[in-house]
Amino acid sequence: MDHSAQRAALADVVAIPVTPFAADGSIDRDVFRALLRRLLDGGVRTLTPNGNTGEFYTLGPEERRLVTDMTLEEARGRAAVVVGVGHDLPTAKAAARHARDAGADMIMVHQPVHPYVSQDGWVDYHVEIADEVPELGVVPYIRNPLLEGRTIARLGERCPQVVGLKYAVPDAVRFGAVAREAGLDRFVWVAGLAELYALPYWAMGATGFTSGLVNVAPALSLALLDALRAGDYPAAQKLWERIRPFEELRAADQSANNVTVVKEALAALGLCRNEVRPPSKTLPDALRVEVAAAIEGWEI
Image (cartoon, rainbow, N blue to C red; front, side, top):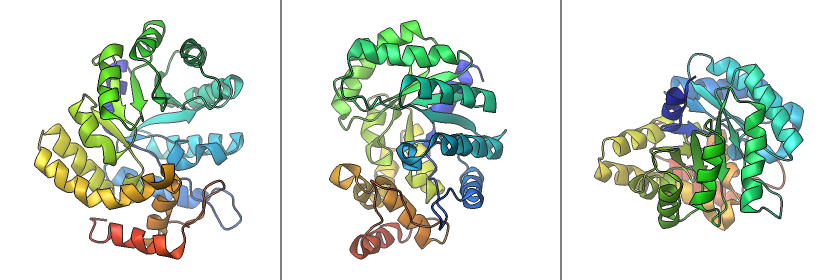
């Protein structure tokens, strides 16, 4: 893909597939493929395996490669694939090379989890990973509210293949300022906090949003995108109101149940088991009832 195609793929619903687990705790390959096909058949055009909704930090290196390979096999010719990479530099670079060799279009670089992250060090981290795979588009995942727009601009100057950013700071004003300082048109800005923040981020310049909810109801996420693209904010607000209870369950307690709520909804639909790996935890009965109520009446 050239940069224009990569940019178009990011200015969309960027789906983060869940990673279903079998009874023995391993990745359920058949169910994973079925869930991917459901997303593709539902109209999803961009997939990010090894994202946070896919429990990236609980997967081992071989599991992350398996998730990448299966996603690329199912998506071939049907959707762009942005593979999540991260951890220490050797691990991230190895994952980036694997994504390239398997046929990915882009990589998404997870926010570094090192306790001491300087602005210049953040740039160097991404440059080293990007230099490993000059053929791929690169999408940094930003969760740090202190990261400055001028820092992002420096990264863009050093790495032309940084085509977009997943911005996941829950502050639309901060997002608007950072995007303008970094270059509103230089990058594709993806609202990284999913549907709950899609409207205010869109108003400030985002042109795509990530989604875990899309695993449950692709039609809802795509309808929200269509309304935003059309500038039909009353329609977008109505969709947002329908989605809000579900997304607020995911966002509660610093997103403690972010993945668990999605998997619980899929389990209620008979699509996968609800098991998650520690430090996440399956929901207590009271919250399971709330999830069922939140998705009642959705077009699924």
